[in-house]
Structures are given as C-alpha cells and as structure tokens.
Image (cartoon, rainbow, N blue to C red):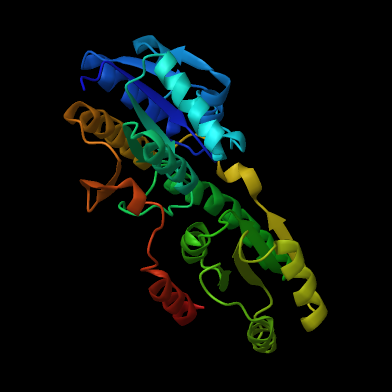
Length: 321
C-alpha cells in the first residue's frame, strides 16, 4: 500500500521533547511528499474526531518548548473494542494511511491493540520521563525530568544541612524507579526507595539512628511515587526515630520545562527515523537508540524495560553514603 498521509499523536503523560519529536515527524514527512495530520489529545482525539492538518509552519518554534502542542489524554473509551473501532473509522475518514504514536507503555499497548484489531500500520516513538520502554537506552523526556528534579533536590539539601533534618523527596515513577535512582545517585542521597526493590522501615531507621549517633544530623531520602509516599515515610520515620522529618513532593514540575539538548536531539532523530520506517513499509515497530545507534524492536516487545543497572547503583550509593 502506498502511504500518502500519516497521522501523529502524543498519548499518556507528557514529557519534555515531545514537541521536538512532533516537529521532526512533521517536517521529515512533508519533505518526503507525505501529508501530515495531527491528532489532538491522543487516542481520545481519534474517538472525538479531533484532527488538524500539520504544515511546515505549524511546528515552527516548538523544539524548545516543553509539553506537547497536540495535547495528551488518557482515554477510557479507547480501551474498549468499540472505542478502537471508532478510532479506526476516524483514521479512515481522514484518509490517514499510517500512524506514528509518541508515548510510553500505555501508548504502545494501545497501538498493539489497534494493530491486532485491523492490522493498521503503526510506528512507535518512546516518549516517557520514566525511561521504562524496551529497545532504547533512554526515552524522550527522561533526561530533562531528572535534571529538573535534581535542581530542586540540590536546593533542598542546602536546607536539610542547615536545619539538620531528614528530608523525604518524592519524585515521579509509578512502576519504574529510574528517575528516583538516577536523581538519588546524582544528588548524593543516602537512601532511595524504588518499586523494583523491597523497602524495610526498620533497617532504614536503624541506619539513620546509627548515623545520628556518629554526628550525622541530616539525611536525604528519594522515593519514587509508586514505591512509597513521602508524607507517609516522613510520618513513620518521625514516629520510629523521634527525629525531625520533612517531606517534599516534586510532582508535575518534573514533566514541564524546556527540554535539555539530549532530549531535543533524541526526539529529532527518532521522529525522522519513524517517518523513514513508514516510507519503507516497516510497521508494528518501536524505535530507540542503543549506544548512539538507531534501534528497532517489535512494538509488542517494547512495553517493558528489563531491570539492568539497579543493583549496581544501589551498591555504589551504599558504598558512598
């Protein structure tokens, strides 16, 4: 089938660099003689028939902007067979021959489901601050999110040392502790709590109390939101140790802001590579970068990232604390 028009959408949680990916997809496709349709609010936009035409100027001056000009949403309607049927009908109505989806594991699952329903041609681009997608060293948005969180934690450490307190910092990461682990390592935190490893209050309290006896009067703990809530951790530690504890939830500040150069470059490379796959007729694939080289995996295999560095990072943190 000759591809004449492609659609592009962003779905799930937004992340810095998504706009750079949209820009790359749009301009690469237009340069190759394809029409480009932007789908507003992800899969929900296919349900609502919310489609716009993207031209060269439509994506001007967005490479440096956080968020996504196409908006994003999580669609309950799309999860049903009826919703997917409506989505496919919308694509057909607008003569869209192939779809490029930018997002994380939920976005990829939606793409896999659509392909299973009607074999619609889809290519995936990894946009997720959690870096929880297989087939790539990093996902679009994760470097910026880490840097944003780290900047905040560096400032909090100043207060922790001055006031001699325990601080609990909650960062994003529901099923993945990637952000928490990287931020804790870079910030010199004493402890990190992540979904991938069991967490024991008794051991942590013992370490804090032993440190306190040796004159260590401040302690920095980074927790992923899916592993433990900062407020609960702070309350429990105060109760068990009697030491003054404070907590900060960084929340959605990690998703916003100007993307760092690494995310802009990654997004630009992967957006162009996605269009290249479309032109070659290679569908059902997800893109990534491994050791700086473009990598291609099956969409159905790209939804879960293997745990490879956690033990190394935890061991190093323990050694240096």
